[in-house]
Image 1 (cartoon, rainbow, N blue to C red):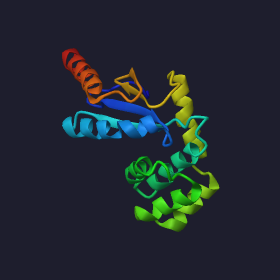
Image 2: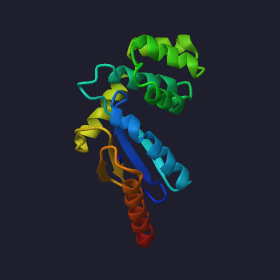
Image 3: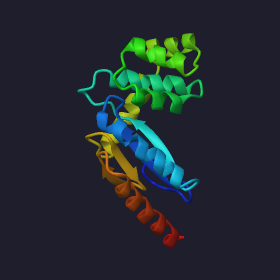
Length: 167
């Protein structure tokens, strides 16, 4: 399931909101961790748009529309980098800036085709006990908020050691 690691399938699952400043703040920490544990971690991003952030659901849809053209991570990164620009027109501009087929992207975004997927992510988060963003599950263990690098490292090392001793 969502919160289990299978064999080498070690995952950090993040539930986040593209309009949340703390989610943007923790991005460099995640990038650093993935660079420092090559091949040992899998990072899974799940949408959890907060009710107070009106632009977050559409931004989440935009990332999933970008995924259809193989550019999820490019859009994901851009949305956090350009966090002040998440209006519908901005999302369409971002799509073109990262080299997506604009017409296909607009059609996907305008149709609301990805709204269900975003809602499913958020529902999974609710069931897992998420109530704020960012929320991380490291091997199923909760790490809440934009924690410093050291906290993540400690949690990851602990889980890697546990996985090694179990095998």
